[in-house]
Image 1: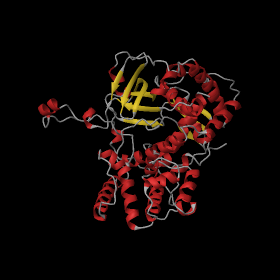
Image 2 (image 1 turned 30 degrees about the horizontal axis):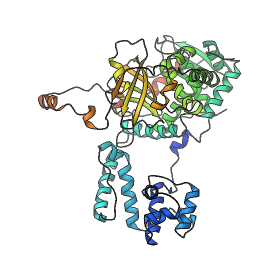
Image 3 (image 1 turned 180 degrees about the horizontal axis):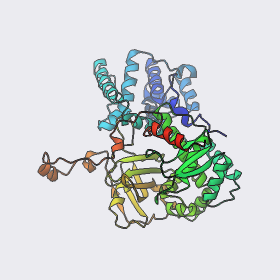
Image 4 (image 1 turned 60 degrees about the horizontal axis):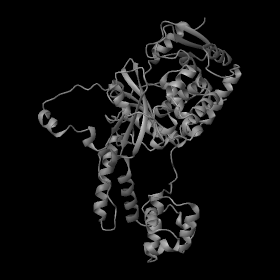
Length: 493
């Protein structure tokens, strides 16, 4: 059984056909209305809506339903097909739409620029200048191919796909269920023997060696059906995970990735399938549903019930939270420097982002739970916190873990309306974040800045993986020659 390629694989599918978005549709409605010398109030009365609602539709801030579009078409004396055409009526209209898209895009947001209201009073030259400046900044960012920008751009696209599906992929859940059934798993935690039986079922034997290539965690010999694993096991890693990740690529029918986006997609599928096997959907949903009824959902309880790492439990919760529990959620893994390693959200929290809309590599506000948890002396207890942000109040739970690159936090959060389902909602800890306002934490207080401006020269501690150029090769970061030499030395003769 192979994974359905239509979801995550959408990264590599170009959009050849022009799409009718809310902005283009709104402009079309406004043009038809003005051509007919109809006021905004008159159209609002004709379709039995408030003028403010019609204004939002014309400004592309609200997308009307099909039934309302039919009513609007009748009021304007036109057809639905004419209303929904993707053709722009004039060069001026095309220019206004292009500037409006730019103003609402990630470049303006990343630079902290205020949105400009596009109006008839602005000359073509003014609008063209704004658009040209935007396009040049965007071009400079996109020029940075073969750098971490390529990875962050691919991550941004992938995160969008995950958000659209609430980070839940039924085809991968089905694969996990089929494999669990094949080895007779009847419920509860998945044992080391279950995992070994799965590998055997798929035609792989396990071999523990002490000379794995330094750039790998496991190596799979597809020709001879062997999975090589390190003799030394990390105390911070689940010993079952490397085995599952090794044969997950077989289950998903992965081929050697041709680009970085495909590499990231395969990694997401592998990690998802691993979590779906170690925390089977039926058992995990049963436990979480009961915890929701009792209003005591806890990442620690999920971790302990299935004997997995906190990060794996938190990841798995994001898979099931919205699709199976109707809880919007966000997740972050943040390096001790404050740099986001990976993140996911479908609850309207506003992550920091760069001009490409990418989150990875940006810095989290000092007031967010993902940062404040590093200052908590008690590393054994769960840390809970409310954070008031410009987009609402969020409650988060977080924990600090260690890796070879240093410490990092794993945090899971929900909007205030959903905190009632979680253990730790009574926490007194509360912070206020004004980010992306620079006065929040990007700019030092005035008196402090006056004393030290121009008198400091810090050496950045940002993880080197975020600064170095992307490694070349099919599998980024892996020394292919070393892997081939290893396989040659260990292959049965």
